[in-house]
Amino acid sequence: MNIVLLVKQVPDTYSERKLSAADHTLDRESADAVLDEINERAVEEALLIKEAQGGEVTVVCMGPDRATDAIRKALSMGADKAVHLADEALHGTDAPATAKALAKVIGTVEGVDLVIAGNEATDGRSGAVPAMVAEVLGWPQLTFARKVETDGSAVKVERETDAGILTVEAGLPAVVSVTEKINEPRYPSFKGIMAAKKKPVTALSLADAGIDASEVGLANAGSQVVESAPKPPKSGGVKVTDEGEGGVQVAEFLAGEKLL
Image: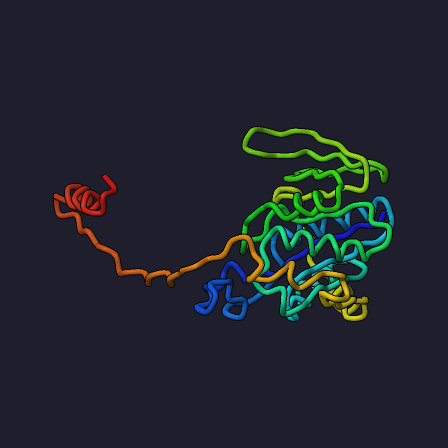
């Protein structure tokens, strides 16, 4: 089974993240960058399917040059090869254009049976790109999966939402997005880290992937942030010492903040 694994490099959630003052997009240089944590679970699921069914796992990533670190992390976990779409013109691309671009890149991988992705990334949190990719490809979409089973001709998932758990099934090829509940990702071994350095990574520009620059980028996005302001610094707070009237003071404070 040939699996395409969609991954994204995101700012570490433990880092201070901020928007660029110039265009209000995410300032990716302001924070440490890591492989998205839900993507790690998508990697694990792809590897489990490969180990059961055979085949190979191809990592597909769209992002700046330093996203190669995220790609190498997925390769060190056990993926076989990667395709990296990197181009300055991609800066600020919105979700629909991202899905179209990813679909173009997926089209460069021969004989894809299954596309696996995390259900959302921790930076944008749109939670829509996997479904949009499926729509562009014209393939079935099975989203928010907490369990995935496949026999090589069809895929069945347990889909968990606020409304409950559904079991849905589709023939291959298909697109599956997984949630954080699906598995516990493996740690890369030292052998895997060393092997990842030699695994092939194909770098594509927009032209290489057959994508017109007028289809991507901030200037062509359907929505834009027009104004932003830094988060105000935390204040020292108000300390209440209970000397018999602590409850009253707390109530007065909450009332003053219009919380009561």
